[in-house]
Image (tube, rainbow, N blue to C red):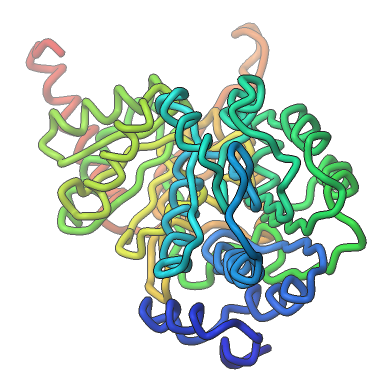
Length: 425
């Protein structure tokens, strides 16, 4: 592995930009990908989030664009970076802006949830690097607000998530509008079968680089699972969040409506909380993220739109309030903590209905998640004459005898006392 960025052949400007950010040593994906990219080769990079992929493609992209002469023509882009979510696209733009600071290069961002007309007006002048989500890019292409005929560089970041989100047809259409003579870099955390088709459409004899086997979470993340009934999750979440009110915590769930409701309930309980999901405008999502980064909000409730691309080193705790349907998304969710060499905790809640998701997650990771409270839910046959089908059952017998289990017992006891006194909910 390369020991320094100087060894990678980067220009002096980029070395100074890295020094200004106190980035001194290349990560494994950067050491492997940058030399191939600097030589003009297509690159297929397989690496989890949090491994330095943005600079792995951003540094060689900027280095080569600094050698190009003249300015981009109106309505054209010279380099295109595609990302699946607004949050990831904004983070990429922010990092590229740091790399091109002090140069004539310009980077633009086009994502949903913002004014289409304003974005079209900005692109009318032409731009060196465009960071975009596929849907909004197609909107602008359909309006003829830009052309991709001059794009000499293409980057697909988190390509597997773009497939998960249904962007396969958008990617095919975009591919047909790009010139054949270009350099392409594709980065993905996993390699599903459909990715082979994408790779063949976009890449020509790529250099393949890989760090960390798919499904392997960060080594410094302390993981645990609580086996708990669905109706008791909120009470346990409140108690656990209350034990570290000064720390930043991410809480993940499945649905937009469910996470909005959860955020309101946590706010009512006295927590400083914000929510981001697909029903929020880009401005709302960005304001929530900024408040979270600055510590004005300590709890961020989110769907999987935040599972990748959020780089906030201060996040200490990630809660899987609901387990994801796609097991790889669990790995991406918990990858929001233990960043920049720090420690982190990932706490999962598993109800009887989620045992299948938990088993799939553990299969992908090739390890079992330690039990913090409760016992794994099991399906047992009902007694004869009492209906058909499996019945979920769990217990409190196993796991750590720590505060979470005792907290559940106290809540059940209090609930029983309340019912016995005739208290109304």
